Figure 1 (spheres, rainbow, N blue to C red):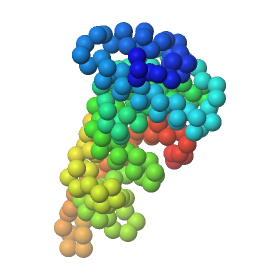
Figure 2 (figure 1 turned 90 degrees about the horizontal axis):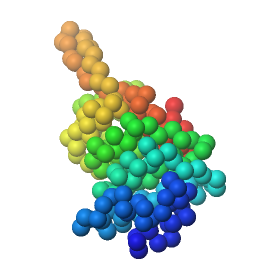
Figure 3 (figure 1 turned 30 degrees about the horizontal axis):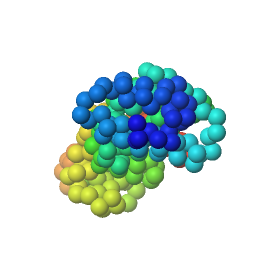
Amino acid sequence: MKAFRGLGSFLEKALGSTPEDLVGYFGGDRLRVRRAENMARMMYEARERLAARGVEETKPATLSIALPILQGAADEDRDELVDLWARLLANAMDPTLNSVRQLFIDAVKRMDPLDAVVLRYIDENKIGIVIAGGRPREGQPIGCDHIGRAIDRRYDEVELSILQLKDLGFFEEHRYTEEDADHEKYTHLQWWVTAACREFLRACYPEVKIE
């Protein structure tokens, strides 16, 4: 198909298939062309990711990983999530990485674009704990309010993304009680980045060192 023009050799490297075989896998419904265009766009981006990292020798991704990625990408045209699908495919083709888990694929399928933006901000700023509420005191973890201002989104939007990512296993919720000088007790809510989240970020952004 026209959408895969220029991608034939890359597709064969990715999973040992041809564009015609792949389109046939997704059937012949009216959305076939749009899905093919979505897949092709993602694959162009995956190829760019590999080139940017200087990866010259790739290997076909195992079909149990590649096909779910391509299926997810076929129904996605929002930039933030197309980027994640491309990063996962590039990882699966890189013999020095190849660390994509089914958990990561399932997570991206359930994400909204803002979830990806929040994750990228957490990755770039090496954030390990996010607190509920407004601006934290000096020395405290970053709050949802801070993240919202940094990415130009409302507080509620950021908190909703954190809660969604918690449901995906990327955050753990912790509560602790603090007592002030007047013996008034306050309960604080925190979300801690999990091992699953750190591994997902390593898989998607191998060029960034995750502590």
